Length: 323
Figure 1 (cartoon, rainbow, N blue to C red):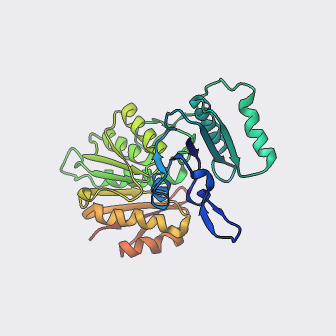
Figure 2 (figure 1 turned 30 degrees about the vertical axis):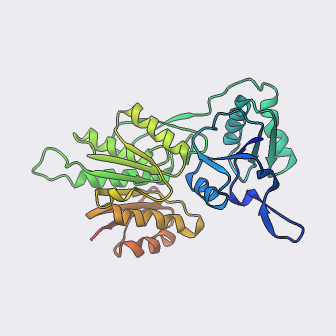
Figure 3 (figure 1 turned 90 degrees about the horizontal axis):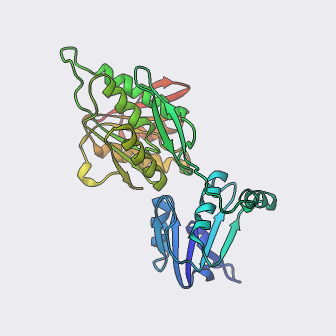
């Protein structure tokens, strides 16, 4: 039997036997494919279950599926992402479908009611919105359900983009009519808000980054950033990765920008800052942003001994120079 699992993480693929010991779930028998939107979860599944095929992609894989199992719930994903994935599952036309809902029955029924009256309707869940920095053009960006800050501008990212744009413009030599071509790495790029705003700010002042690289572990973020690069006419290399940049990019960037998530005891921030340290040239500048510097600043000091705090929009932009 060909089974597609949607929305499952490693911990969901185990069950307890009568002795309370964990073992692979019985329904993992047969030809099983597990879809993940985040490559981190994809790699974790591959490591824990070598017999399960793990796929990381922005949309569900096509196939003649005997069974599609979908795990969702209010604490697992947004309602909009749930609806989007339910629609994709419906379009796959599996022989059988099972909804593994983690939450109240009332919430489950509410989710189902939104599609059962018109199951053939195909909705577009993408969103477009605008953002700009002082002196830069207003950019129209597209995002998809599952992307960080879908449908809205992230204030922390906007604060980061404003500080970096201002400082790069200020670094222009007074004797030169143009900026030097900065190479920029945008880590955890999402749909590309920070990188594209900084690049557009440089372009509006008569220059553009010599190289713009964007990295994210979420397949839909990579899809959105790639689309925005084409729509905006701002060239960018967009990479799907949960482990920073390839080794060949070490020591090649002038500027690193990142808005690391605050959960997991800043373990993900460690990945961001380790990447910043090895990817920057000597004299290159690392910029990160957080709501409260007390949590992120000690992490950044492990990689960059000197950290300057720049306040903007109620956020702290942490700036460090690689010696």
